[in-house]
Length: 113
Length: 117
Image (cartoon, rainbow over all chains, first blue to last red; front, side, top):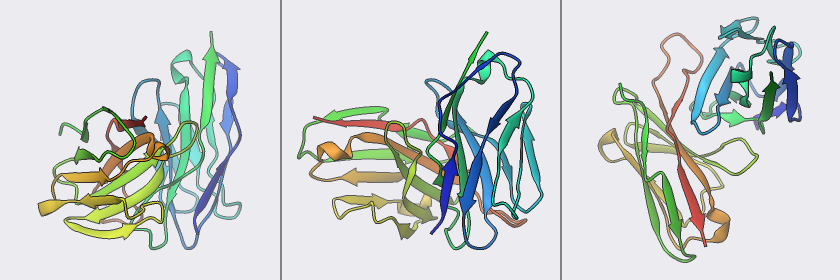
């Protein structure tokens, strides 16, 4: 079956530091890949997505590239802000799943001024 | 477009009682999903509707759980004879079918937090 593995957290950074959150997946066929974010006290919202190999999703300064050869979709941001503090979830939808999402366990990011 | 709404936002119940949650998806979305999220974990899939048809159910969905989506609009999730292990956040999401390949994003509601005492 489908599975997603995220780097263990929590991650604590200073403002303007570089961020990488690793995500690898196992899936049959060609899944669509997503990063969702959950800010404190808010619901899940889409951060970015990629639907085919070598696609790069980007939003709010975050980027992730769909790497089929390494089955990875790592999240990066060049300069984090305090407002980026949140829980980040990598997820996939693929195969005959009717689009249901399989999530990683989430990575807590805390950014200090 | 007012987004996905869920009601109630919080529910506290005693073990053995029945509870029902409601989800109102984005109106033009024909796909509706229910997930369950426990503390420190990512959401886990429970069930999926395309219009009014329930097309997939997770093994997590025991026979105490039932979901409906009459007329392909709002959906309800009922838990009978609740147990303490049912305590979790129950999330609803909706999406449209992609016309360009792959899968469209799912829009999530705020969730219903269930506490079983």
